[in-house]
Image 1 (cartoon, rainbow, N blue to C red):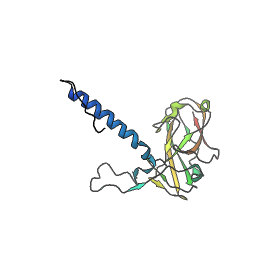
Image 2: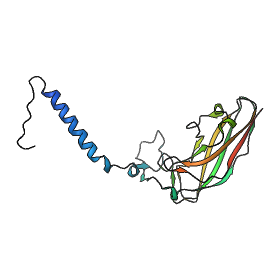
Image 3: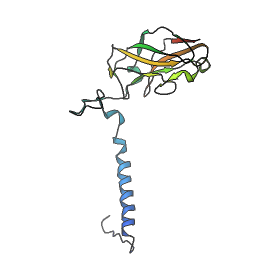
Image 4: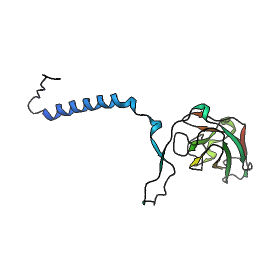
Length: 190
């Protein structure tokens, strides 16, 4: 821009300077955007308690795993409950991390349990404080290394008499589904 001179009209120099600065800043931001990668953002290894102020939590870099690095294996689950209308029951499922990368809660490699069944066989009003509709639970542990167990716990409420089936499958939302093993629970409401 050598040799160019910017001339601002009287009474408006600040406005035109702000426009010029804004356009220049946007161009710089857009030029640098390809260098930013979400997968390189450091994530706390564990979530500190709200009253902890003494030191910062340790961090680790968590990258988005590829589909060939994730896998799971069903280990156990609580018994299918029988509850009354208005009653509640808590269910717990455990899956082994059979993949090659850790599942880190609150990061791109967080594992959750997803409802995959026929919606006509489960009344969504039965979901009690699920993290998301169709996602009854996320891993309880802060980190689940390969070979370790992840625990998924959620609550259901009886809303009408009948037997309701919840078909479940683990997933890592940023990557995809984990192994399908036909895991389900039948909730009987009386």
